[in-house]
Amino acid sequence: MRKTALIVAATTLALAAPAAFAAMDHESMPMDHGSMKMEHGGMMSMGKLAHEEVVDGVKATFRVIDIQQKMKEMGMKETHHIMVMFTDAKTGKTMSGGEAKIKVMGPDKSEQIKDLMGMEGGFGSDFTMPKKGKYGVMCKFKLADGKVRSVKFWYSVK
Image (cartoon, rainbow, N blue to C red):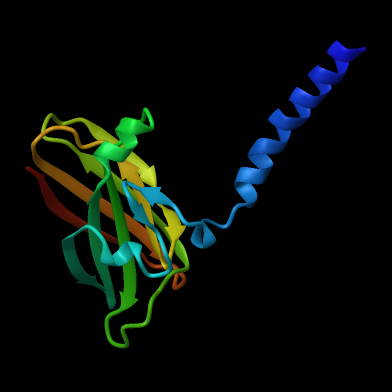
């Protein structure tokens, strides 16, 4: 009887965890990338400004944060957090609704493609960029107006 209860409890926990994770509001969670707490508006002021470009009336601002040390401490391989914020080029108003995807091509021609998660009015994800050199960053995004846009730039890891 006790073994059955343990199995039922373990199964319930295992099944509940994905639902709880899916229900989390990423924007309201303080997250720790490195020793940096993400407070409202905080992430887009962190890291290195990597690129800005206006495409069809939308200004895309990309920032990169080196998170290698903290991720290593957690047993994870990702080394950099790439985030992008979209604003109306004329009004400066944040354009947070929609979806974005980034492809990173390494100096060794390796590729990573990730859908970006909405966070703090922008979008972001963690990538592995362990080698020094130039990385090609290509972002394709579709905002609330339904128009697909893209931006490409080089980012150097030193």
